Every structure is written in C-alpha cells, then in structure tokens.
Amino acid sequence: MKRAASVRMHALTPVLLWAGLAIALAAVAAATAALLQRTHDNRRIAALAEGRDVEIGEDASAALTFARAHYLLVRDRLDDARAPTERLALGDARRFAFAALYDKGNAHLRRALEIVDAHRYDDTIAQVNLAKEHYLRALRIDPGDWDAKLNLDVAMRLVRDFPDGEAEGDEEPPEQPDRLWTDLPGLPRGGP
Image (cartoon, rainbow, N blue to C red; front, top):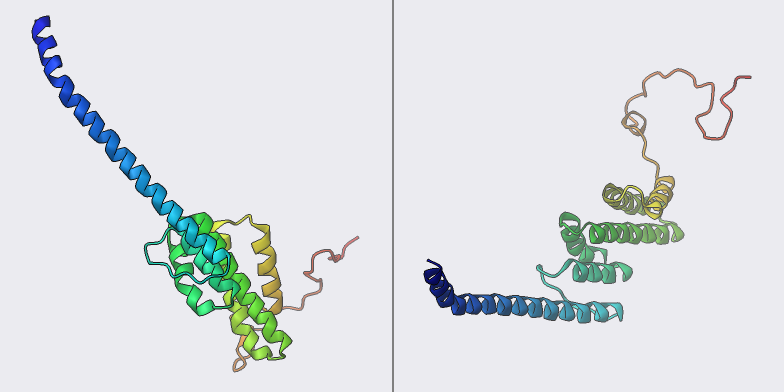
C-alpha cells in the first residue's frame, strides 16, 4: 500500500513541479506588466507636473486621471477638466475623488474672484454656486477636511443661499414673528 502511494507520488512530482513553475511564471509576468504600466503612468504624471499636456484614455489609472484633471484645473480649463473629475468622483478611488472635487471647487472659486475683481457681479453667482457644489461633494467623501470646510464657508459668504420663500419676488413672504434676539454666535441672547 505504501509502495503504490509512493509510486503515484513519484509519478505526480514532475506534473506538480511544472504546474508550480507555470503559476510562478504567470505571477512574474503579471507583476512585470503592472510594474511597466505603473512606470508608464509615472512618466506621464511627471510630464503633466512639468507642464506638458498629455492626453489620457478612459481606462487610465486614478493617479494619472487626477494628474490630468489637476493640470487642466490649474490652467483654468474647467470644461476640459469636467470629464476626468467626474470619472474620479464616480470611481472607487476616494482619495483622488476628494482631491479632484476640491481642486474643481478651488478653480471655480478662483474664477469667481477674478470676475468680482472685474466688477461683473452677476456673472459671479454661477461660478460660486459651482464651487459650493464641488466643495459639498468633496465633503461628502471626507467630512472632516478643514480646508474644504473653510473654502465652502468663503463661497457661502460670497453668495448667500436664500430660502425659497424669500428669493421669489412675486409672492409676499409668510408672516413670521419678530425676532427679539440675534442668532449670531457670540452675541448675547438676553437674560440675566
């Protein structure tokens, strides 16, 4: 009985060795392909960081997609940056999605401030609202990020969001009781 098992094991040994070698070679090939892809992506990211415009495909990695979106946003090409930013926002790479949405909010806020400097106040509202939208989307991913909170606060101070009843001019707002005390933080509400 032991002899039959030994003969069978001896016959299977070359098959097992060849199968193990094939699996190892497949793993090495996959690791090499991943390394080559990452090296290629890193070269393209470096080119974008140096200021050279590099086109990317729909199947680009999240890091490369973010680098392209950042390149476009820094150069105020907001329309071109929409596709890579949305691809990241809808993808699984939360860190890159947050960074892309935050950068897009910053780009819209920068553009809004430039419009304010040019004294075209009516054109500012759309840019500030887009900035607020992108900051809010970024904060849904990382609610604790103070930079995004601060920038959202700045944007909200530039253009106030009024409740529906107050924003419409056709109807009179509903009768509200007089407010005797202020709602501002840090100011006394009365009392002894």
